[in-house]
Length: 157
Image (cartoon, rainbow, N blue to C red; front, side, top):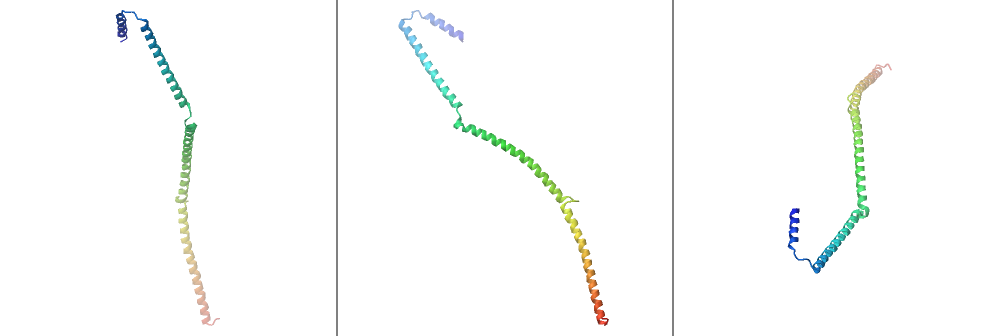
């Protein structure tokens, strides 16, 4: 494609047989100056726009509020992670305590229910002994009262 352009330029320059006049040279010079001026103005406008964009990009958003917000969010996330880890540790401790309480209550040999059951059995045995003792005392009182009544009737007294 570059060869086609160069060959077309050579043929175009061969076609020009008349020399350029000074007016044509001036016009071409003015056109190139205008082109350079417009190009320079465009480039300056682009540079100014880029500088404004760079200033805006470098400027703190919301007077640094966005940066503060991001640091606060990071701090909150760290605290949340620490809370989760301590919560997990506390959960393990709580589970261990619940297990020990469960063992203390439901252990078949030394648990609370086993002790209450043995105490209930002891109370039942004591109740039987107490009933026997009461019966013995009552029979003794009845026997003593009977003897006293017999002695009174028989005039021994």
